[in-house]
Image 1 (cartoon, rainbow, N blue to C red):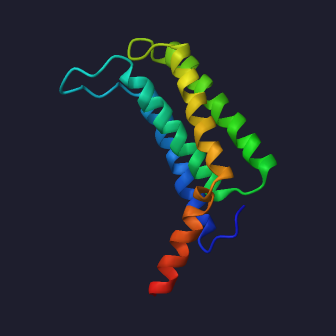
Image 2: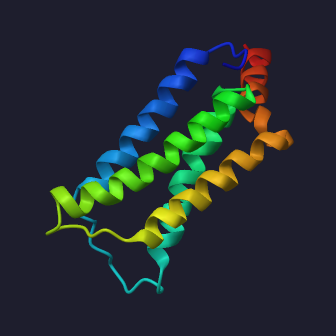
Image 3: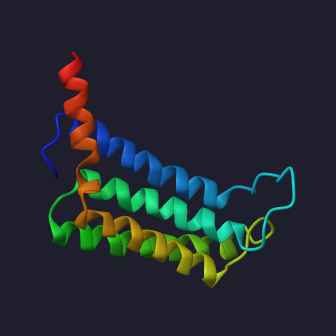
Length: 132
């Protein structure tokens, strides 16, 4: 894990985000107040998995761990697609394009590990501590 002042808090937040994605993937989709653009849900998939991968980059530092986490997140996306078709077919459906969008989100989020964005949480902690 990264050396963070509140590493357990950030790890817990990341795990909560994973739980939220699981729950939101298996409950009825919310009603949309207006017509959404075609394939809008793919943008939601990319965004959700980007956030999960970006969160992992904030918490974990070692490349091997990040590769394992990335594989786990891609597997999670695939497993949730299967679970939708298996356990809640009356609410959701299996869509391989959703799984692909999830993988794209993971790839984009993991790519931030090679940028200065990898230290956003550490920077945020320093800013908070400086104000205390």
